[in-house]
Image 1: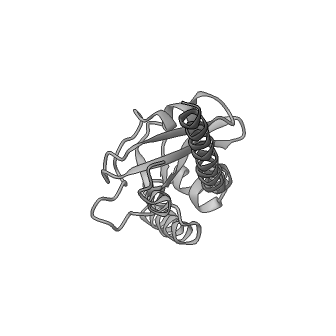
Image 2: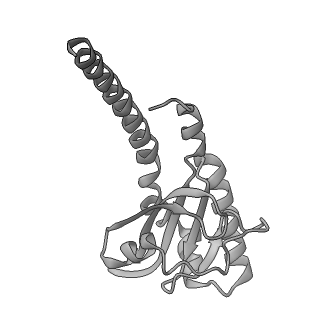
Image 3: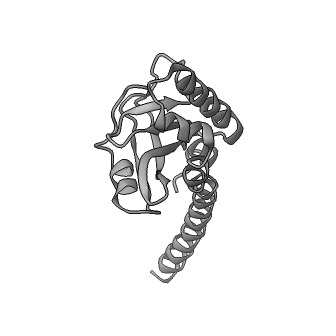
Length: 169
């Protein structure tokens, strides 16, 4: 019994250390993306899309900028929604499963972002359109004190899970 207790405690401590490493890794990855919605929401081309969404040239410019930012940051998808939750521009605008025109007002990250100035919406879940799990960060875009839309960054964690492997932990 003494040996069993000793090795059981050793295993518990080893697993705790492994879990701590996984948590630190995950938090490091997520922290790279959580600042993006607030920063990107200040870009003039995206603000213009919120004010002039009906203008094709303005929307096209926003779509192309989001595509470029998606490539540069490694985010899975970056998209801009109006106050009703309808996607006006998206980094996947030219994909068959584009988010443009889709409404995500029901998503927690949208509702949280709209609740108060400066509040960051967060959500881990299955994508309605893509069917892929991801972590979502959403932040309201403001003109002075008035919200004019929400910018969302979706992070794909499949690569991270792959790196962790299929260990028992």
